[in-house]
Length: 85
Image (cartoon, rainbow, N blue to C red):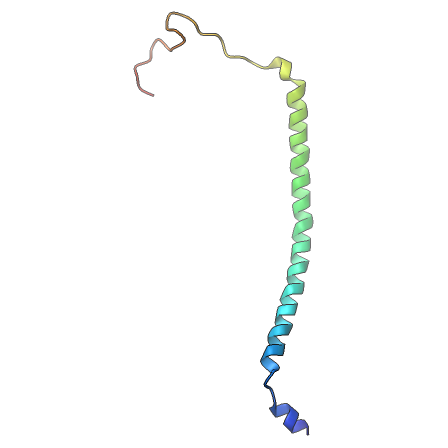
């Protein structure tokens, strides 16, 4: 009886592949959970940096530098312009 069961291995490949896919799925879930928490930390740091930059920019908006009004004889153009960029 055991010899007959041992010789019949028709579904063995399917079971092995199914177990392999289940293992890969569980490993992937573990990896994605770990990466997800690391990614959340990166985005949190970026959000903090951007918020700090926005706060600093809004606090110094009265000290912005504006370009000088160049309305001299050149009509706003550079007098030494030779047509090349």
